[in-house]
Amino acid sequence: MPSTSHAADSRTAAAAQHEASAPPVAPDHARHPIAVVGVDAAPSWLSERLDTHADARRAFDEARETFIAGRRIDMGALALSLGVDRTSLFRWVGNRDALLSEVLWSLAMPTLAQADDAAADLDGPDRVAAVLTHFVGDLISADYFRQFLRREPARALRLLTTKESEIQRRYLATAEWLVRRDLGDAPLGGSIDPAQLAYLLVRVSESFTYADLITGDQPSAERARIAFRVLLRAD
Figure 1 (cartoon, rainbow, N blue to C red):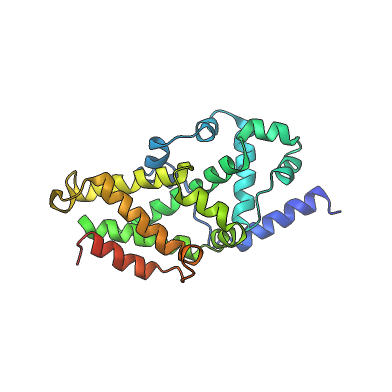
Figure 2: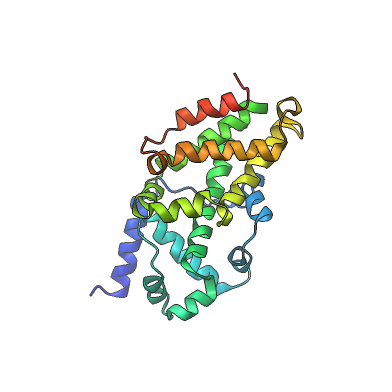
């Protein structure tokens, strides 16, 4: 059995291998408007706990590192690495789905911030389409994220694309925020309200990001870009 220090070194090496595909967690992204709107709109028991409970934060950080390293978050293994029993871990962070949801959204936040910054020179429907296309492309190209989708496809779709998880509610809130910021409160000439348009944009995003799981097609940021622009009447 490897020593504790060897195991820690192994985790560090594994994380380093995925560093290129992992989104940054720079402080300038921590309070970026697009990064915080989702959690503000749909907070969870765990998201609120992370700022006040040191042990919950410690468990969350360890789980996030495990995920970025491309490994499955296992509650038993996580408890062991933290030196506590499973009961304590569940008391700190809730069940595995709750923890996974927060880890996934914590990675979406800086990715959304990067996407918004990359489209800063655009405006109106062009900016909305560019932000969402950039986001879809980053999700498709993130190795650790694709590994999760391949490893747990049913759970991934349930956590990412259904109302049972905070993730889709947060993504919907983020998309609506984008629509209101860049298209106003009466987008597309008032033919649709911002919430309805946001829902359609999120569904397009999900369809092309998770195409391999939904229809067996290849995920495609380019096809998503075309669909976003058609929907937003950008062309």
